[in-house]
Image 1 (spheres, rainbow, N blue to C red):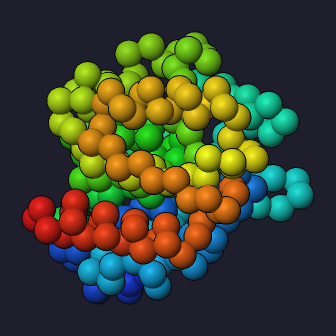
Image 2: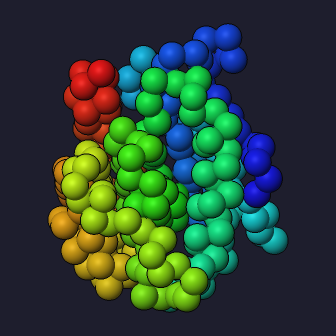
Amino acid sequence: MSAQPHVVWSREPQDRAGTPLVVLLHGYGSHEQDLMGLVPGLPEEFTYASVRAPVKMEFGGYTWFDLDVERLAYSSSAARNAVEDLWEWITSVKDEHSSVTLFGFSMGMAMATSLLRSRPQKFAAAVGLSGFAVDPARGEGIEGWFDDEALAAAQIPFFWGRDQEDPIIPAEHVEYTHAWATKTVKLTKVLYAGAGHGVVPQEISHVGEFLTHTVLKSR
């Protein structure tokens, strides 16, 4: 990713200054327009910016980093490179906004949680739907990258929504993510039966309430 990825915004440039920013991070094989479809159900006080992942896939869509979809296997170091590139872009826009919140779906949740863990003081809150957190034991080159101790001290609000019967995210990824989240963030975890590997309207309503109470009302 370059310092200026392809981004779709919910507001025109002249209307963004001073607003709280939510960075939308789509899933594997998707694109930046996907999560924009959720914006009408979210609080209008925010500016939403949906970022396209950097790697174009052969069959269409984009990915943040290479992923073995059969086993959901990945390189943690590759994930780190993608996160660092994304941080470059966030750095270029964050000062215009009152705060930055991360919102990731599926693989985008891996990106959101990795950003949060690498720079816990930079974000107001985070949302992860139907995804997972990166396990640093899966790859070399990321030792000392995550500052979970500082994140635990900060108690950043984190909303985690998923279906217990999600057919895509393996149990070991869920178990690792649960262990990580319960120790390091101010966790709101909600299960949505029937959502599968997707998002249901009730979930978006809950996310909207979460953003209102943790970001807007805390300003």
